[in-house]
Image 1: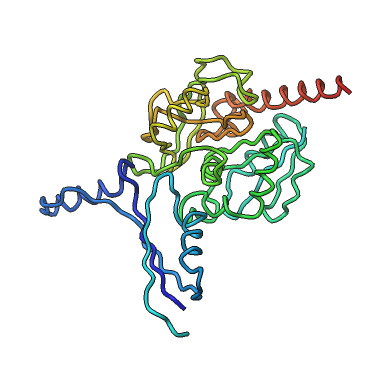
Image 2 (image 1 turned 90 degrees about the vertical axis):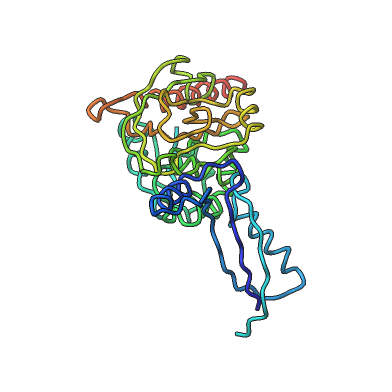
Amino acid sequence: MRKVTVFITLKQGVLDPQGNQVQESLQSLGYNVVQDVRIGKYIELLVEDGPDLEVRIQEMCDKLLVNPVMEDYYYEVKEDVHS
Amino acid sequence: MKFAVIVFPGSNCDQDMYHAVKEVIGEEGDLVWYQDSNLENYDAILLPGGFSYGDYLRSGAIAANSKIMEQIKLHAAKGKPVLGVCNGFQILTEAGLLPGALLRNKGLSFMCHQEEIIVENNETLFTSGYQVGEVLRLPIAHGEGNYFCDQETLRELEKHNQIVFTYRTNPNGSTANIAGIINRAGNVLGMMPHPERAVETLLGSNDGLLLFQSIIRNWRESYDATNARI
Protein backbone atom coordinates (compact mmCIF):
# COMPACT_ATOMS: atom_id res chain seq x y z
CA MET A 1 0.00 0.00 0.00
CA ARG A 2 1.09 3.51 -0.73
CA LYS A 3 -0.02 6.69 0.88
CA VAL A 4 -0.81 9.28 -1.74
CA THR A 5 -1.36 12.91 -0.86
CA VAL A 6 -3.10 15.16 -3.36
CA PHE A 7 -2.80 18.94 -3.04
CA ILE A 8 -5.48 20.92 -4.85
CA THR A 9 -5.23 24.68 -5.32
CA LEU A 10 -7.38 27.21 -7.08
CA LYS A 11 -5.94 28.27 -10.40
CA GLN A 12 -4.32 31.64 -10.65
CA GLY A 13 -6.92 34.22 -11.53
CA VAL A 14 -9.78 32.30 -9.90
CA LEU A 15 -11.33 34.40 -7.18
CA ASP A 16 -10.99 32.96 -3.68
CA PRO A 17 -13.47 34.87 -1.52
CA GLN A 18 -12.77 32.54 1.40
CA GLY A 19 -9.04 33.23 1.18
CA ASN A 20 -9.69 36.97 0.96
CA GLN A 21 -11.85 36.83 4.07
CA VAL A 22 -9.23 34.89 5.99
CA GLN A 23 -6.58 37.40 4.90
CA GLU A 24 -8.73 40.24 6.21
CA SER A 25 -9.23 38.39 9.44
CA LEU A 26 -5.49 37.80 9.84
CA GLN A 27 -4.84 41.47 9.18
CA SER A 28 -7.42 42.47 11.75
CA LEU A 29 -5.42 40.38 14.23
CA GLY A 30 -2.45 42.56 13.40
CA TYR A 31 -0.74 40.30 10.87
CA ASN A 32 -0.34 42.97 8.25
CA VAL A 33 2.56 41.03 6.78
CA VAL A 34 0.08 38.67 5.10
CA GLN A 35 -0.19 39.78 1.49
CA ASP A 36 -2.40 37.03 0.10
CA VAL A 37 -4.28 33.91 1.25
CA ARG A 38 -5.39 31.11 -1.04
CA ILE A 39 -7.27 28.14 0.38
CA GLY A 40 -7.01 24.72 -1.20
CA LYS A 41 -7.66 21.08 -0.42
CA TYR A 42 -5.54 18.23 0.80
CA ILE A 43 -6.64 14.65 0.17
CA GLU A 44 -5.02 11.49 1.53
CA LEU A 45 -5.48 8.25 -0.35
CA LEU A 46 -4.36 4.78 0.61
CA VAL A 47 -3.79 2.98 -2.67
CA GLU A 48 -2.68 -0.53 -3.59
CA ASP A 49 0.76 -0.36 -5.11
CA GLY A 50 1.33 -1.40 -8.71
CA PRO A 51 3.18 -0.52 -11.89
CA ASP A 52 0.40 1.79 -13.08
CA LEU A 53 0.02 3.55 -9.76
CA GLU A 54 0.83 7.01 -11.07
CA VAL A 55 -1.44 6.61 -14.09
CA ARG A 56 -4.30 5.64 -11.84
CA ILE A 57 -3.69 8.58 -9.52
CA GLN A 58 -3.73 10.99 -12.44
CA GLU A 59 -6.91 9.41 -13.78
CA MET A 60 -8.62 9.72 -10.42
CA CYS A 61 -7.62 13.37 -10.20
CA ASP A 62 -8.79 14.15 -13.73
CA LYS A 63 -12.08 12.28 -13.42
CA LEU A 64 -13.21 13.24 -9.95
CA LEU A 65 -10.87 14.75 -7.41
CA VAL A 66 -9.96 17.88 -9.35
CA ASN A 67 -11.97 20.19 -11.60
CA PRO A 68 -9.44 21.40 -14.18
CA VAL A 69 -11.59 24.41 -15.04
CA MET A 70 -10.78 26.04 -11.72
CA GLU A 71 -8.19 23.92 -9.95
CA ASP A 72 -4.58 22.78 -10.25
CA TYR A 73 -3.10 19.85 -8.40
CA TYR A 74 0.02 17.93 -7.62
CA TYR A 75 0.50 14.75 -5.66
CA GLU A 76 3.13 12.93 -3.69
CA VAL A 77 3.49 9.17 -3.32
CA LYS A 78 4.74 8.34 0.12
CA GLU A 79 6.21 5.37 1.91
CA ASP A 80 4.99 1.81 1.81
CA VAL A 81 2.22 1.40 4.31
CA HIS A 82 1.88 -2.14 5.61
CA SER A 83 -1.66 -3.11 6.37
CA MET B 1 -44.44 15.03 -23.44
CA LYS B 2 -42.75 13.00 -20.73
CA PHE B 3 -40.30 14.54 -18.27
CA ALA B 4 -37.86 12.78 -15.97
CA VAL B 5 -36.92 14.68 -12.82
CA ILE B 6 -33.70 13.08 -11.60
CA VAL B 7 -33.45 12.69 -7.85
CA PHE B 8 -30.04 12.33 -6.19
CA PRO B 9 -29.46 11.90 -2.48
CA GLY B 10 -29.57 15.54 -1.34
CA SER B 11 -31.71 16.92 -4.17
CA ASN B 12 -34.31 19.23 -2.64
CA CYS B 13 -36.02 21.04 -5.52
CA ASP B 14 -37.18 17.81 -7.16
CA GLN B 15 -40.74 18.14 -5.86
CA ASP B 16 -40.96 21.75 -7.08
CA MET B 17 -39.75 20.71 -10.52
CA TYR B 18 -42.17 17.77 -10.59
CA HIS B 19 -45.03 20.01 -9.45
CA ALA B 20 -44.23 22.53 -12.21
CA VAL B 21 -44.34 20.02 -15.07
CA LYS B 22 -47.01 17.72 -13.70
CA GLU B 23 -49.51 19.93 -11.90
CA VAL B 24 -48.97 23.40 -13.32
CA ILE B 25 -48.09 22.57 -16.93
CA GLY B 26 -50.08 19.33 -16.93
CA GLU B 27 -47.59 17.10 -18.75
CA GLU B 28 -46.43 13.61 -17.89
CA GLY B 29 -43.53 13.29 -15.53
CA ASP B 30 -41.77 11.01 -13.09
CA LEU B 31 -39.41 11.46 -10.22
CA VAL B 32 -36.54 9.16 -11.19
CA TRP B 33 -34.22 7.96 -8.44
CA TYR B 34 -30.62 8.19 -9.64
CA GLN B 35 -30.12 4.43 -9.40
CA ASP B 36 -32.99 3.66 -11.81
CA SER B 37 -31.04 4.41 -14.91
CA ASN B 38 -33.42 3.65 -17.76
CA LEU B 39 -34.22 7.03 -19.29
CA GLU B 40 -35.03 5.84 -22.79
CA ASN B 41 -38.74 6.58 -22.57
CA TYR B 42 -38.39 10.19 -21.51
CA ASP B 43 -38.49 13.17 -23.84
CA ALA B 44 -36.74 15.62 -21.54
CA ILE B 45 -34.53 15.38 -18.48
CA LEU B 46 -34.70 17.84 -15.61
CA LEU B 47 -31.86 18.05 -13.07
CA PRO B 48 -33.27 19.83 -10.03
CA GLY B 49 -31.57 21.98 -7.42
CA GLY B 50 -30.41 20.95 -4.00
CA PHE B 51 -27.23 19.65 -2.47
CA SER B 52 -26.58 16.33 -4.17
CA TYR B 53 -24.24 14.26 -1.99
CA GLY B 54 -24.07 17.14 0.45
CA ASP B 55 -21.92 19.15 -1.98
CA TYR B 56 -19.04 16.88 -0.91
CA LEU B 57 -15.75 17.49 -2.74
CA ARG B 58 -17.30 20.14 -5.04
CA SER B 59 -20.96 20.92 -5.62
CA GLY B 60 -22.28 18.53 -8.27
CA ALA B 61 -19.02 16.58 -8.58
CA ILE B 62 -20.18 13.26 -7.13
CA ALA B 63 -23.54 13.31 -8.94
CA ALA B 64 -21.73 14.13 -12.20
CA ASN B 65 -19.77 10.89 -11.81
CA SER B 66 -22.72 8.69 -10.89
CA LYS B 67 -23.94 5.95 -13.21
CA ILE B 68 -27.09 7.75 -14.35
CA MET B 69 -24.97 10.46 -15.96
CA GLU B 70 -24.02 8.01 -18.72
CA GLN B 71 -27.71 7.79 -19.61
CA ILE B 72 -28.09 11.56 -19.41
CA LYS B 73 -25.09 12.08 -21.70
CA LEU B 74 -26.59 9.61 -24.15
CA HIS B 75 -29.93 11.44 -24.01
CA ALA B 76 -28.15 14.77 -24.59
CA ALA B 77 -26.14 13.35 -27.50
CA LYS B 78 -29.43 12.47 -29.21
CA GLY B 79 -30.37 16.15 -29.11
CA LYS B 80 -33.12 15.71 -26.51
CA PRO B 81 -33.64 18.53 -23.99
CA VAL B 82 -31.74 18.55 -20.70
CA LEU B 83 -32.37 21.33 -18.19
CA GLY B 84 -30.22 21.74 -15.09
CA VAL B 85 -31.27 24.26 -12.48
CA CYS B 86 -29.01 25.41 -9.64
CA ASN B 87 -27.34 22.19 -8.40
CA GLY B 88 -28.45 20.73 -11.75
CA PHE B 89 -26.37 23.41 -13.51
CA GLN B 90 -23.42 22.59 -11.26
CA ILE B 91 -23.80 18.90 -12.15
CA LEU B 92 -23.89 19.69 -15.89
CA THR B 93 -20.65 21.68 -15.72
CA GLU B 94 -18.98 19.01 -13.60
CA ALA B 95 -20.10 16.36 -16.10
CA GLY B 96 -18.59 18.36 -18.95
CA LEU B 97 -21.96 18.83 -20.69
CA LEU B 98 -21.57 22.59 -20.25
CA PRO B 99 -18.33 24.62 -20.09
CA GLY B 100 -17.08 26.49 -17.04
CA ALA B 101 -17.67 25.97 -13.33
CA LEU B 102 -19.73 27.40 -10.49
CA LEU B 103 -17.63 28.87 -7.69
CA ARG B 104 -18.44 30.12 -4.23
CA ASN B 105 -20.45 33.36 -4.30
CA LYS B 106 -18.20 36.40 -4.24
CA GLY B 107 -19.71 37.62 -0.96
CA LEU B 108 -19.45 34.13 0.59
CA SER B 109 -23.04 34.09 1.78
CA PHE B 110 -25.84 31.83 0.64
CA MET B 111 -28.35 33.96 -1.24
CA CYS B 112 -32.05 33.29 -1.42
CA HIS B 113 -34.14 36.02 -3.01
CA GLN B 114 -35.73 37.10 -6.26
CA GLU B 115 -33.47 38.46 -9.00
CA GLU B 116 -34.11 40.23 -12.27
CA ILE B 117 -32.94 37.96 -15.06
CA ILE B 118 -32.46 39.22 -18.62
CA VAL B 119 -33.24 36.94 -21.56
CA GLU B 120 -30.20 37.22 -23.86
CA ASN B 121 -31.07 34.54 -26.36
CA ASN B 122 -34.56 33.43 -27.35
CA GLU B 123 -33.45 31.22 -30.21
CA THR B 124 -33.37 28.14 -28.03
CA LEU B 125 -35.93 25.44 -27.41
CA PHE B 126 -36.11 26.62 -23.79
CA THR B 127 -36.60 30.33 -24.37
CA SER B 128 -38.43 30.75 -27.67
CA GLY B 129 -41.50 32.04 -25.83
CA TYR B 130 -39.61 35.02 -24.42
CA GLN B 131 -38.41 38.21 -26.04
CA VAL B 132 -34.72 39.12 -26.11
CA GLY B 133 -34.14 41.74 -23.42
CA GLU B 134 -37.21 40.66 -21.48
CA VAL B 135 -36.67 40.87 -17.73
CA LEU B 136 -37.84 37.87 -15.69
CA ARG B 137 -38.33 37.83 -11.95
CA LEU B 138 -36.92 34.50 -10.82
CA PRO B 139 -35.73 33.32 -7.41
CA ILE B 140 -32.12 32.38 -6.81
CA ALA B 141 -31.06 30.16 -3.91
CA HIS B 142 -27.39 29.26 -3.92
CA GLY B 143 -24.05 29.55 -2.19
CA GLU B 144 -22.03 28.53 -5.22
CA GLY B 145 -23.50 30.27 -8.23
CA ASN B 146 -20.54 32.37 -9.26
CA TYR B 147 -20.12 31.29 -12.88
CA PHE B 148 -16.49 31.08 -13.90
CA CYS B 149 -14.79 30.37 -17.21
CA ASP B 150 -11.56 31.53 -18.79
CA GLN B 151 -11.53 34.34 -21.35
CA GLU B 152 -11.23 31.96 -24.29
CA THR B 153 -14.32 30.03 -23.19
CA LEU B 154 -16.20 33.29 -22.65
CA ARG B 155 -15.37 34.40 -26.19
CA GLU B 156 -16.65 31.06 -27.48
CA LEU B 157 -19.87 31.40 -25.48
CA GLU B 158 -20.42 34.90 -26.86
CA LYS B 159 -19.52 33.94 -30.40
CA HIS B 160 -22.05 31.11 -30.49
CA ASN B 161 -24.75 32.98 -28.60
CA GLN B 162 -24.64 30.46 -25.74
CA ILE B 163 -25.30 32.98 -22.97
CA VAL B 164 -29.04 32.60 -22.49
CA PHE B 165 -29.66 34.45 -19.20
CA THR B 166 -27.79 37.22 -17.37
CA TYR B 167 -28.39 38.97 -14.07
CA ARG B 168 -29.43 42.61 -14.32
CA THR B 169 -27.45 43.22 -11.12
CA ASN B 170 -24.71 40.68 -10.53
CA PRO B 171 -25.42 39.06 -7.14
CA ASN B 172 -22.59 36.54 -6.93
CA GLY B 173 -19.59 37.62 -8.98
CA SER B 174 -20.44 35.61 -12.09
CA THR B 175 -18.27 36.17 -15.16
CA ALA B 176 -20.10 38.49 -17.58
CA ASN B 177 -23.17 38.46 -15.28
CA ILE B 178 -23.95 34.97 -16.56
CA ALA B 179 -27.01 33.30 -15.00
CA GLY B 180 -27.54 30.57 -17.59
CA ILE B 181 -25.80 29.05 -20.61
CA ILE B 182 -26.62 26.52 -23.29
CA ASN B 183 -24.41 24.00 -25.09
CA ARG B 184 -23.36 24.47 -28.71
CA ALA B 185 -25.97 21.99 -29.95
CA GLY B 186 -28.70 23.98 -28.19
CA ASN B 187 -30.33 21.19 -26.17
CA VAL B 188 -28.60 21.39 -22.79
CA LEU B 189 -29.39 24.44 -20.66
CA GLY B 190 -27.95 25.18 -17.23
CA MET B 191 -29.13 28.07 -15.09
CA MET B 192 -28.79 29.17 -11.47
CA PRO B 193 -32.19 30.92 -11.11
CA HIS B 194 -35.19 28.69 -10.43
CA PRO B 195 -37.88 28.82 -13.14
CA GLU B 196 -39.75 25.96 -11.42
CA ARG B 197 -40.25 28.17 -8.37
CA ALA B 198 -41.82 30.88 -10.52
CA VAL B 199 -44.78 29.18 -12.17
CA GLU B 200 -47.63 30.57 -10.08
CA THR B 201 -48.40 34.22 -9.36
CA LEU B 202 -49.54 33.14 -5.90
CA LEU B 203 -45.88 32.38 -5.16
CA GLY B 204 -44.59 35.75 -6.35
CA SER B 205 -43.95 35.25 -10.05
CA ASN B 206 -44.95 33.10 -12.98
CA ASP B 207 -42.13 34.29 -15.23
CA GLY B 208 -40.67 30.78 -15.34
CA LEU B 209 -43.78 29.29 -16.88
CA LEU B 210 -42.85 30.20 -20.46
CA LEU B 211 -39.60 28.28 -20.17
CA PHE B 212 -41.46 25.00 -19.65
CA GLN B 213 -44.09 25.93 -22.21
CA SER B 214 -41.34 26.68 -24.74
CA ILE B 215 -39.83 23.23 -24.25
CA ILE B 216 -43.22 21.61 -24.82
CA ARG B 217 -44.13 23.76 -27.82
CA ASN B 218 -40.80 23.07 -29.53
CA TRP B 219 -41.02 19.38 -28.76
CA ARG B 220 -44.55 19.20 -30.24
CA GLU B 221 -43.47 21.05 -33.37
CA SER B 222 -40.51 18.77 -33.98
CA TYR B 223 -42.69 15.75 -33.15
CA ASP B 224 -45.34 16.86 -35.67
CA ALA B 225 -42.67 17.61 -38.27
CA THR B 226 -41.16 14.16 -37.80
CA ASN B 227 -44.54 12.47 -38.11
CA ALA B 228 -45.50 14.56 -41.15
CA ARG B 229 -42.40 13.25 -42.94
CA ILE B 230 -43.48 9.68 -42.24
